[in-house]
Amino acid sequence: MSASSITSRIRCLNKTQRLSAVGVSAVAAAALSLSLVPAHAETPAKPQSEPQAASAAPVAFSLDAGAPQAKVIQASLIEQHSTAEQLVKAADAVRAKQAAAEKAKAEAAAQAKADAEKAKAEAAAQAKADAAKRSTEATTRSVARTPVYANNLDGWISEALAIMKAKGIPGSYDGLHRNIMRESTGNPNAVNGWDINAQNGTPSCGLLQVIQPTFNAYHVPGTSMNIYDPVANITAAANYAADRYGSIDNVNSAY
Image (tube, rainbow, N blue to C red; front, side):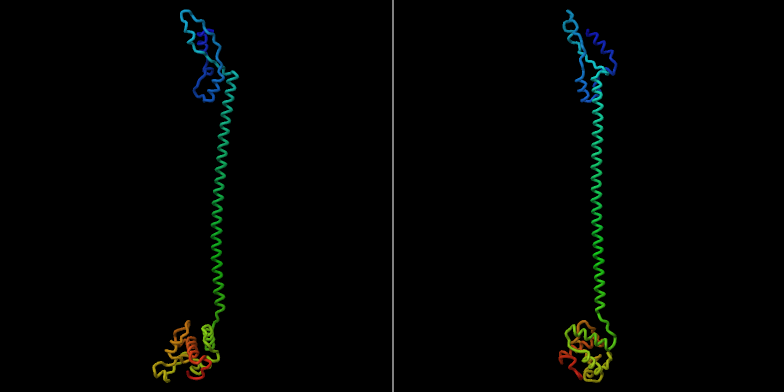
């Protein structure tokens, strides 16, 4: 076949039959290049007048779109495209699964932290409530153990004896009652305005007729500083008698 025939035949090929590199990937181009089959061309006779003309003619390649090689390449490209899409979808699915797992883990950690804080707060509140309850119970028991004394001579003597016992001051109910009745007949506001003490400006006062200097010297801590207070007067007088006579029980007259 002559060179002019080949050139004419190439011009007759339609667009789908011509090879083009535009839009073809490197893989497709390589595959196509491997499948190209050189068209049979007859080396034109070398005219005597143009010895190099025929050797300059290009070698033409043709590939029929319906040829088996084209179908194989097309199928390969479709398969590669499908595989790529599947890989992308699989990767997206893996990323989505990982994101969901991380989100679930974060939510679980947040919930665990919230539960721990709630449990801690509840435990603290319970401990506080228990402490308050114990304090209330202790106060109730303390109040229950604290005796209530009557506001009369019997109650004053009984309360004074409890304080004297706690302070280590000797004396008995009978010794206190006997001396009180002799000194004031049980009147906590009694005042002696005629004896030597009164003449000296320090009259005897209260249930056991104590003068102010003696009351001040023998006052029992925890009691009133008022010399007319029944319990304070009794305990101060009993403290003085214990120091002077050994016990109020040993006093049977003016002291």
